[in-house]
Image (cartoon, rainbow, N blue to C red; front, side, top):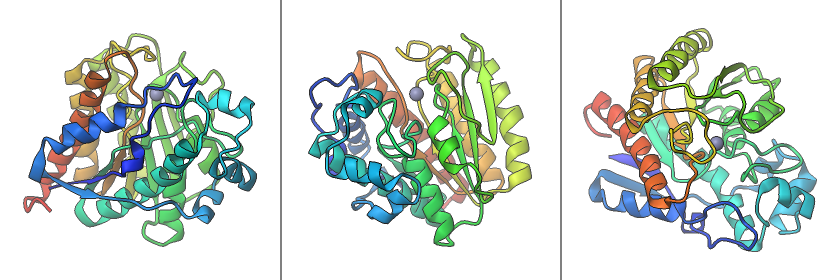
Length: 305
Ligand SMILES: [Zn+2]
């Protein structure tokens, strides 16, 4: 079984003035539903406000939850924070936390949203409202469920918000492999940043990932990985700059899963970025990531737990 966390509120109609494609999460759900009894579904609750305030400024949390985010911040986010968008944003971090808890139990679990790695303490940015990765990482440590959490961010954009929000926490490390010239212009400082030149292909990407992630894993020895599995390094992605093929993305998931499995580290995945006009094709890439990761861990534990 592959443990998948989903909430109906993830599927939100697009607010006006949005450049983000909102039908992605519904298509991901539908594609996973087609896999029937291979998937065990879990529904998260609304994230407790104090969890959000553990990483975000309490004024910003209030602005979002009350759907009164200033226009300047909404422009930075890329869409208006309507009551529906706010309700969704308040659930997604709990979804990543539920996925992390399920991963501790079963080896792997996936949230069908999240990976909102650009969200900062006082504002959202780049289609991200609350930083679910930072919220979940801090929560898992504070609850004593994990001693050392590593956030592995393979989205083509740097995980600047995650790096900034989690800096100075010795129990949590951040890793980001991204296109150097891509958004955000001003990068934050992750524990390890791997900035790639434009056009890197499958082999170049996988070599860079393997040679930089392995030493970090062996030095830090995390007992939980939160994975931002953005599919925007894909060659035809509208906002990417890299040249990974579908096979390259699949090899990436097998590499990340294999490194975690070999060290006995549970892994919870989030969706992350993936952009273009063909929403179904993008959703298929995200679902392929979830299934590839789930199959790798499922093969490992044999019992299919
Ligand atoms: Zn991205």
